[in-house]
Image 1: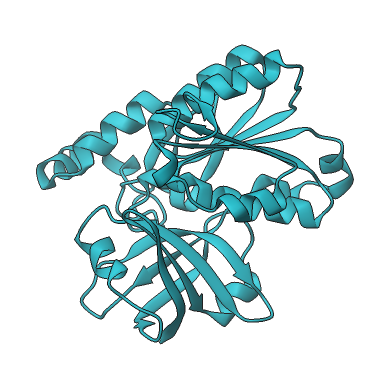
Image 2: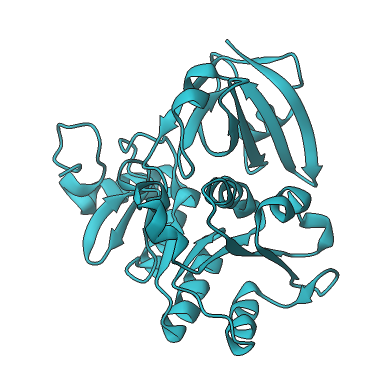
Length: 295
């Protein structure tokens, strides 16, 4: 069992938990995720690792209520324990594989939208620990939906807050902030955008126009976290990929966002899943090693 050491509601429908998971904490890196199950009869939920403490053996997760499973999760309190807590899963951030001296020569921009702030935070924190500064844009619908502001301030070189309604920070979408920063003389070698798919799509359209290579995390489309359900199938540069086993990070300028968003809507129903399985054949899912979908 995996004991919850801390549980709190960060803002409306968004929750943070610190969980005792020593093996996961010992081996995880920024960009990876865990699969949790609250009870024996509960669904398996993939969640990006927001933070970790190797000495204390803890993993921090942040999640939003989007269905029955996450609603049930939100009712758990400090002292309760998860039935299952599996990880780390997925591939670490590309930065973890890049020589530190090379990273120190890059100007890096992160763009976080909504709950996407949670997976951005550990990457920026890890870079700061390596002596690599990074600018961060955090976007929210309004001030009341903003999360982890103080934590992000502590690790970002420069933090820019934007709200759609102008209630806090800069007014407008994160794409406008990107354009404004470049117009003000900022230059970036790489951008990492994490958040709702529609946000990542328009971030990539903006950065492509500005000539900034961009990495996106496709964790919003993950369902079972193993590649076997076919929920996270997407096309990247004309090739079929699966976010949970091949990613979750990909070259944002190569991701077919329109297809991914349309497919996610179809996947929500039983009929839709059967339809996708029929038309996609052996490429419907990957990771099982038998159907050919993981080749």
